[in-house]
Length: 422
Picture 1: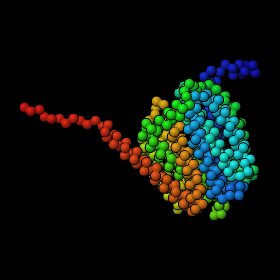
Picture 2 (picture 1 turned 30 degrees about the vertical axis):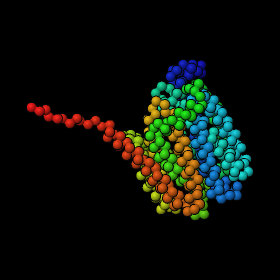
Picture 3 (picture 1 turned 45 degrees about the vertical axis):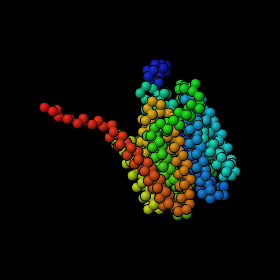
Picture 4 (picture 1 turned 45 degrees about the horizontal axis):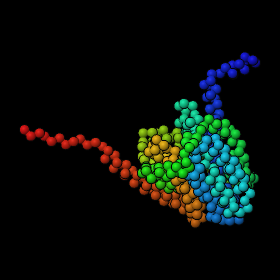
């Protein structure tokens, strides 16, 4: 027994450090997944909350809208603080505030009170963005890119895994206890997050808060690529959220009459698309960011157009939703990479602004998707999604045209050889 203990204690330091980092990375991924899952709760619980508050689905659509508006505002006003405040401290404070906000929302008696609660939830739920920014500095040498990829991948699990969990539980315990459960999960992972984030320090502790916000705004003013990417992804994520915000209403409505639990399980379609996208992305490595975005804008347009035809044929509808979800991930990855490349020297402010645009689009899509469903069912939501993708495609076409002109100007021309006179 003593020999076995000694063997454990004499393990190579690199091996012990590797195991410790694996545990910390798992904690960072779990914390990110739970935090991002929170902001999609109102979409999954929409029909149940509308019934509980005695309002129409259209009136209750304010709930998934305000949480994404709050999230966008939080990215702009709070995420830049990660340059000034140690990530461990920021994540701790925001996790505690998020727990309190979720618990307060769970006891709100009316839809307006719940809307206020969810707005605050969204404002402080952007913990994953702080963790993603800190993870390369926490990772062992050479493991930074893998750490970011792991945590970004966990967001897909959080978005759709949270939807599945909430859908399975809401029928049994009600939406309020589902919200309480997520508050408990946020608090439960906090100690592990604090341990994982302990080595990370603020990168610019003396920088004024106004300067941090200013650098975020400057990224869009000084970079055409950033402006184009933000606007394109605004429309794309609006289309994505329009589909998923209306999903539970479509599946639990009188035509299909699924239970909330079965509607929640439809999130497996989204999770499958999200997990398959990184594997498929390997086949696009030789394509430019704009080429990838253009290709999958066509895929997204085909998917939303097909929804106008197959919305009530569930197997075909599931294929269309799978393609739309995967296309969104490809386009966002390409657009975000374009933003980061254009700000390689100082990417954090530009990335924050990009994510503000993403979730501003998400809020727009949540509201308009439910409104379209109320007016004309899932087929009209498909038409709305197609229209939004067309708008994004116009932005893409203008960006591609500008890039082609820029490339032609940069191509050196051979000077005309004038023959010498003899």
